[in-house]
Amino acid sequence: MKIKLIFEKFAPSLFILILVLVAFIGFSWKEIAKLESIFSKKENEQTVTGVAGPRLDRDDLKGYAKELGLDSDKFNSCFDGQKYKDELDMDVAYGYELELEGTPAFFVGGHYIDGVVPFSILREAIEFELKGGDCSKMPANLTDYVSSDKEDINIERGEKKGREDAKVVLVEFGDFECSYCGQFWSESEGQLIKDYVDTGKVLFVFKQLPLFTVHPNAVNAAHAAYCASEQGKFWEMHDLMYKSHGY
Image 1 (cartoon, rainbow, N blue to C red):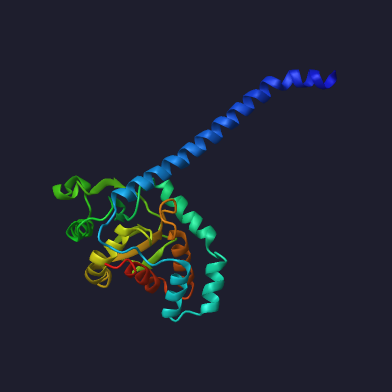
Image 2: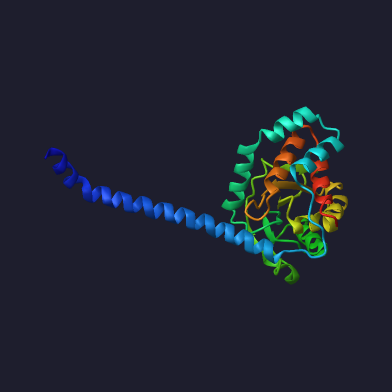
């Protein structure tokens, strides 16, 4: 009888608590599904035709490590054990926090550029920032590509190339299996490095954002990059993986 009275007393509260929990779980899964849908849609829109798929399975990645002269035992232990899983999870979470809708995604001086753009546009965006980046005076041809809003991008975590004190910071959020990321690497990155990074004007930062819902090898490729970085060969591994796209 006492148990029944206790149950009757607290039943309404328990029922409300259960409803709240069910609603919360449903909302969380809805948001996850929404993000996956955004990434899938974005990548489907960015299909590059006429290009062979990248070679990024586990054997390929270990082969690249050997090609780069990395310590195979050390690399394989790092790679197979997913040593940097927590770091990768944090990088992906940061991309979600910024509400990025695909890769590549760029921030030039904190201003967002969505996807691959002609190098001429990227050049003009950099030159605009080098001259002070006054958004009230942004050239008309940049407004279609470059957001006037400015984000304070955390670059503490990320692979860097160039002078730390460069006037402009250019951040790329990339996925090694993303066809358009490979296109950017093939068509624009070399010129970016030559004209702006090597001359000390731009600090180039690469941050991981594997689109794991649409790219089955993206996460392994990201782990390979972390493990290569551990041995001082991030950029070399980065180049080999993008070269495998076949551009």
